[in-house]
Length: 119
Image (cartoon, rainbow, N blue to C red; front, side, top):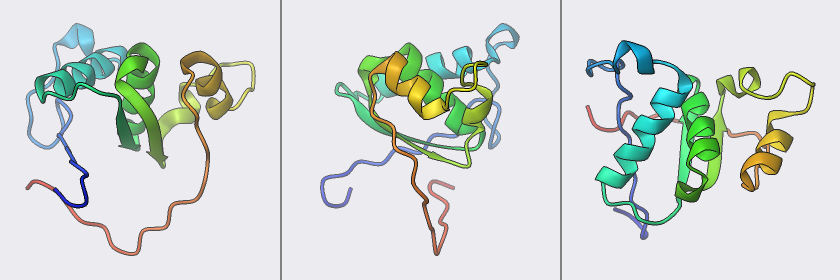
């Protein structure tokens, strides 16, 4: 805990040696529901800033869409987000803004050093 920020970095089910979700729950909805339960299980009772990288970005978007009351903002890094947006050509950011009421801004994120959290 630094500067009042509590960071949780779970390994998604089926990643990093963790047990996979049940076979009928291995879509983004299943992972979004898992993330919602994770937050509740950790005692997070207010909307969180959720970060997702690659596949985790798709999970973060689904969490924001299906459980909007749990997400304050999203940070997406090289996300699969483009695959989850509408088929009519609107940007994923505009889609999220309209559907979830979450302000989404697209900006470059430059990381000079990457660290692994939690083994």
